[in-house]
Length: 264
Image (cartoon, rainbow, N blue to C red; front, side, top):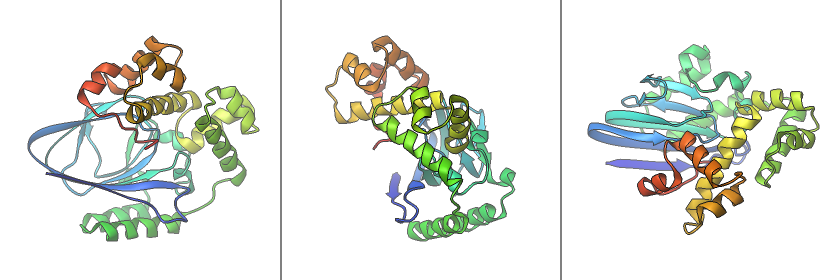
């Protein structure tokens, strides 16, 4: 049996937090779930059995801040799982964690290793609570207590660049001009605020756009999909699909219903 629920953040946190999700599941034997890069940083708490990550070859920490990944992983589990996750907006986590977010790249950093007493306390309180609404209340109380506006001018610059990406721009030099930064400055600030260098982040979001297009236009051809999402050609699309999901588009569609965690 499995239960999945999403909750929207309060209006004041919406610019920084995309959503909260809660997942409970029970398995009598070993089960697995393939997770693909989403382009979003998350804060995760395990209130049940922990998941084993094939990409990192270890159990995930009981509570962790998850950085951006550039490849897929299979999460293995058995028994009862109970997950609480906060998904941040692309540059949102920077408002709560005073660190260059690129330091989280390809990592699930345990809350204990962050040496953050407030975050550790939040985890301890969430572990003892099953009610979803109460859990959201505790998380938002923590976030409001930590909310800080990172250097406003840089946040505005990165958000302007992100809006340009959503409008179809994929050239890093053009994004740097939109942000009114030199190419070198833009790469540094972008990585600090989003947790990835611009090229890796653009590749991830392009892949998520391909998933969203398949989700909303199921009859689209691969050639048209490649054109609409900014790939050079169909072979480029297939190659990137295999890097991010482990499957070609045709193989992926035979196993999964396409869904974009980023755009949906």
